[in-house]
Image 1 (tube, chains in turn green, purple):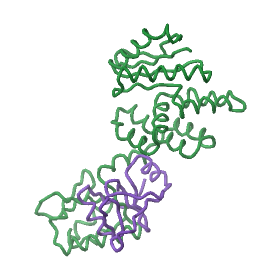
Image 2 (tube, chains in turn cyan, purple; image 1 turned 30 degrees about the vertical axis):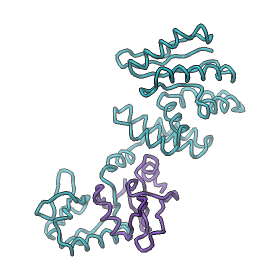
Image 3 (cartoon, chains in turn cyan, blue; image 1 turned 90 degrees about the vertical axis):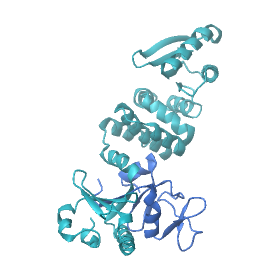
Image 4 (cartoon, chains in turn yellow, orange; image 1 turned 120 degrees about the vertical axis):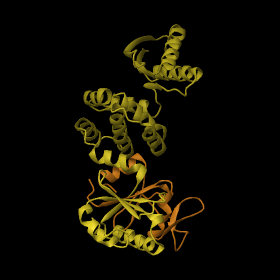
Length: 265
Length: 80
């Protein structure tokens, strides 16, 4: 921890003793006359950087540099504090089991994408906004990472991949299915709001045709939202005769507008 | 959980922080050494990092860490 006595030019020394374990917020926007405030509910010392003399600003830079160099402080962007705190606290036993199972099996990259995806799934279950987490996974791991994330959220890793791995002595069937799922995205389609009806139709058709070619027995179509579900149902009614498949509803929740359909090939 | 004092900064404060640590930003937005702007700073994973991506600075040798999920996950697991 930083010895707050170092801030003697900013905060009176008699205030320091009671806030030694506080975090420090550098506020560059405030035009407050006072150079600091003590935010006791949030255990924060807020320094109004623009309200302190130039000499003290220079001193503040020296303190920051020395605290990083002697490892007594960590600098964190305000918009990442919440995520970092949640990550430190994230300790889901079931997720740990899944990660432990796949650690000796997957490549480092797939495993890290799965770890991030399990965290995202937890955030989703807790009704947190997952948009930026999803974007982070896609930016770091590309479409493969996005597929891992979608499959993970839908429970494929524990419900499909682990049983398949355990039931396949040489794991041939597992790796074939895994690669078809990840590299070609064949085993499941996750319909999202930006997909047009034409895209949905062509993506399902591609999966049915290639799925049959590679010997898949079924594929799953996941849809969330009234419009997406309507489009999926419309496709099935129009095409099931022509493309020779039957459908089975795996999961429907009309109040939440969630549909998972199995297309049996 | 990290027991070091947290110094929290916002987007506006990044230039102040970087200057304190002897760093600057080049025309493409990458964090560079102030004394030699041809030297780009790298994250512990060996990636060049922009000012926009910067989220955490820690440890004696000054580790500059991006704010994406994977980077912060690794930081929280002590992998960086």
